[in-house]
Image (cartoon, rainbow, N blue to C red; front, side, top):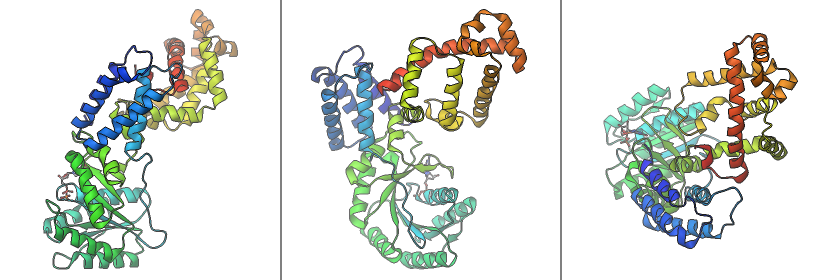
Length: 444
Ligand code: GDP
């Protein structure tokens, strides 16, 4: 499990704060020690860990107690915010040239997954509706050129190559000219990697960069190398000047050090992450989602934030009053499911819930059908039944009528009624989370 160890380490820290009333310098010592240890074990560099622990501690001790939010939840929130900051805060989109083709130069050591990234990137760009061409600039390994051609074919993009006897800077320049003629939107230039940094490689990269004046210079680094990845990004940035990094192999048992250190150490953002060997396993790097994953909360926070956006404040307050008075009825139930629908497709929502990201499309369709199913039963209820679900709970006759009118079985109607009462309880919890802006209550 990605970041598994880090997640466990953080959990140890929260657990030590169970039952305390307020965060103090004293009761923070142990949890912060756990957090520090977890980060070091995840191979985050020491200076980064020190700064992180310091700013979390400062913020935690200085924070007012928020009503309804327990101190351990408060600390989760602070750690989460600081993790997001550490990883650069916002997502760093790829930059495209304002006029003419965009040139993306890829650099990286051997074996980090650079050739694979070329093809994945082409695939990603195609999905954005951009035409793409790959340029084979790794002239030292004929096998690398062949591999690029095979992958290019797989994703359906042309690969420009001049074999192994021409200088990479010349190939790159010619490739860009060719792409211009063909009115191609984005050119991805692959370059040679070495096992280690050496001067020849850096000089060659500088030459290629000068030849094609790239919009993006991205260093491909392997997440498994931990803080070493951050050091590499720093070196390449100083030597040739880069615009960002692509972190590969996040699907492996990477301990997280790379994802956490790159921005802080090098000043350059991680723009994309690879999480598998398939062509569609490349995506933008979202610091907030990554923080959610590290904390083992899936993307509950994004879900909560989205819910807050959708549901206007007044609605939320009115809804909460209702719920607190235990009057949550079928009208609210409908409103609620429609709010969920407004938040985006069911699949997206499920993807944000921890443990649900692996839900299959078939299961999602099933869930969507379920919503429609419930709506048709609610539509068959009389207004007074919607407002007072007790009426349905108490009268089999009423349930039979609803079943008949909505063409469902009596048992299905009974289930829905039971579900509403269950939901009353669950909504109470959810509203608590949204009001307090804290997290963990959702998952328990
Ligand atoms: P290059 O030497 O940098 O060009 O590396 P390659 O693209 O040839 O990749 C080296 C190996 O890593 C290959 O076996 C790839 O299938 C594998 N690989 C690349 N990216 C990923 C990734 O994101 N996840 C996993 N699990 N494997 C990857």
